[in-house]
Length: 473
Image (tube, rainbow, N blue to C red; front, top):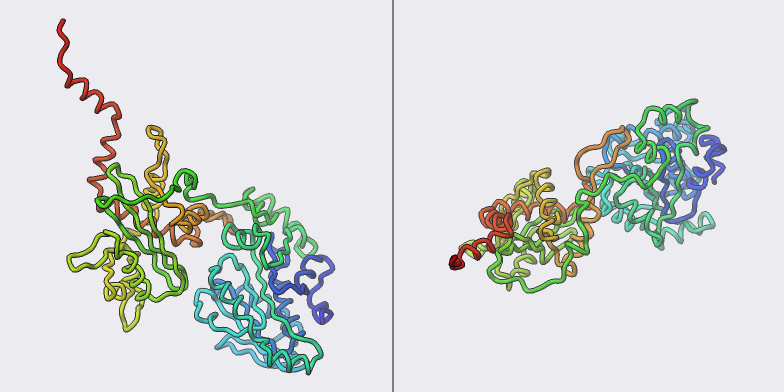
């Protein structure tokens, strides 16, 4: 069936593209420089799978609606139109294009195959699918949890359909998941590029590898007009260009410590970063007499209702002298947006927590200020050779992992570097910001007093000397 694509995709000048299009790996990825042929190749792979396995159901996804139809779907439509007389109307190749539900039905040698177009900004459209294959363009921009969900939805070719298909066509159908994109410091790097045990087969190509299919002077113009970091990432396809750690001072060997019993008189704080499709993260912190903060416990859960999380937090605090109201409600600092998100029975998420004994206080969500304050607590002071923020490493493994992976946005394809953290792998970092800001705002006098005591390490010794009896001359 590979020959069916040869007239509309010329692989002569891009052999890596051809390898990717017709590969037999269940999961595969094609990454590298811009215009290296990955998107058009992946669209060709979609059509190949639709042809090779009549009756297939294939999802094409991207982060936003606009990007999906301006770029990815547009590339696929070009290939379809070449076979269908220049239109998406019913013809020799197209059975039906449903513009309302974004479904394209293609004629095959048997049952029609269906291609569904979905965008991750509305994840409900992607959930609960039963698929024979999926293709995600610029997958690094899509939440890893959603990608993992799609991996689990390759269930269209069940036992009954497989048996029927094999009887009709003489071979068993297979399921495939594949992604494309540009090098990125997020989950794709960790899970595929840097992971020798990854289940994705990775194809890589620079822009240069597709030179013969690009305009004359195109690459030279990029090399002449774009910054060196941009060229390295988006032309050479290098994975080494990172936006930089948000907290470069974080050192697990310094900030990660063994746990110890928290003294009963130390003030304790709880912060929560809410998510349902994202993780919900809860952190417990304590403040000592010297103004040092200890993160002594974490909770990290996926796809749990607010009521369930609230009950679990309440249970975790049974023997913990955390801050409570006069009515016994546990005080937790949360993202202010939880007062707008929908809960059950027309309640907000904050309402759901309140019903279950957790009183939410709106956390300070000034990202820039919060990052700066966390960085100050992480800073190793020259006078003491110690920071002011510590994590119980055996009890807070996810927070420690997050601190090492929390990155600034790298330079993007437009040559712009946003001075904002990547919205990836940031749940624990957000919860930590809320906690530090809550401590600063609630216990500022206590911290200021502790810091003043440290300004002059010789003050106590001078006072001691002044209290000595005056020597007789």
